[in-house]
Amino acid sequence: MAAHPATASAPSRCLSSARPRCADHRSPSSLAVAAPPAGLRPCGSRALRVRAKVASVVDDGVERPWKLSDARLVLEDGSVWKAKSFGASGTQVGEVVFNTSLTGYQEILTDPSYAGQFVLMTNPHIGNTGVNPDDEESNQCFLGGLIIRNLSICTSNWRCKETLEEYLMKRNIMGIYDVDTRAITRRLREDGSLIGVLSTDQSLTDDELLEMAKKWKIVGVDLISGVTCDAPYVWSDKTDSEWEFKKDQSSATFNVVAYDFGIKHNILRRLTSYGCKITVVPANWPASEVLKLKPDGVLFSNGPGDPAAVSYAVKTVQEIIGKVPVFGICMGHQLIGQALGGRTFKMKFGHHGGNHPVCDLRSGRVDISAQNHNYAVDPESLPEGAKVTHINLNDNSCAGLQYPKMKLMSLQYHPESSPGPHDSDTAFGEFIELMKSNRL
Ligand SMILES: NC(=O)CC[C@H](N)C(=O)O
Image (cartoon, rainbow, N blue to C red):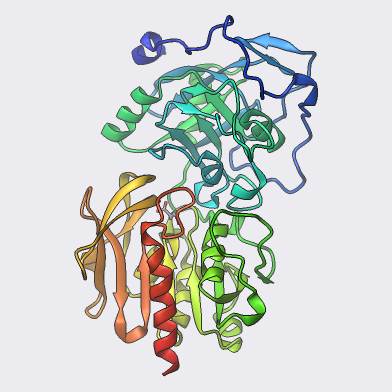
């Protein structure tokens, strides 16, 4: 199997050993490579290992306490992409998707909806703002790995606490760079999402990696159960964000129960900001227990994988809708679509990025939105009474629903952004109005 021609002709990484290191780049001695925290659940088929710490190494023009190794990405179509590894080493399988966000790689890394996937960033320059404790969207990274063009040789941001490299190493996540991300993106756009295998293991042949990619399945698999919380908890925020959300929850006006299908923290932060006290429950929490809490509203969160593979969650949604106001976001929207009797389908390569135009058909208003999904609700399959309220203007797919009689609203995209534009934050206000109207 020959290397993909686009890889062979791709320009080499634009770093030269003559280039000086930035003043704020951490000295190698301050880099600690820790064992991965207990409980990490990598989603691929093989355990990863954190790269062994060695004495300071000058590799690719940058001083590091570990040696960069060669890596390969083998796609299920047989193409082989040579790259360099900058995160954990090992072998990992996943579905490759491309994300068009210009920044926000940390929020993307910690969005549980990416479980089972490799995220390829189309922005060629990643890592320059490092990583900080306030931009986490969950407590760990569930994605399979990160694929980028250029890894920034320095980090420069006042909030930065560690480099992207250190972060991936500590969390045992694979990262590759120096690969032609534009050529891979074009391939995914033409052929649709592809399963791939990332490997730093030189003992495995390309054909063996290809075999692994061909055997691996993501459609029809329940990925929610691997990312949901273990027990209910009341949300309280420990981060310091630029958004004004630090409201005192004791004076909150609305009690909301949020189903955690892989919930992003900014959904919880934004609801708090709008005056909600939130109890988060695991994905398999019985609807009867939730209704006993007499919530003002229920939120069905985002989450990874195939919405048609989680019939238990669809059943829960069915038991709740019509009884209290509900708001579904992304996976939550897809589960609501199915609970109403509709169907979901897999898109060619999905929507992943912070620049998707969405039209609110009720007002004609266009928002630029953050999106991350590979599946969509088929509007033709919805029953009478359910209205499509929003469409994605790139492909006219269903981006929002309402069923007024049931006090139900849902969006396929992410009003909480993180990362992405804040245009659609008003959706949380709409949910508040829905809960208010139910009190009258
Ligand atoms: N962000 C999400 O909730 C993703 C929903 C679903 N897993 C999809 O890919 O379509």
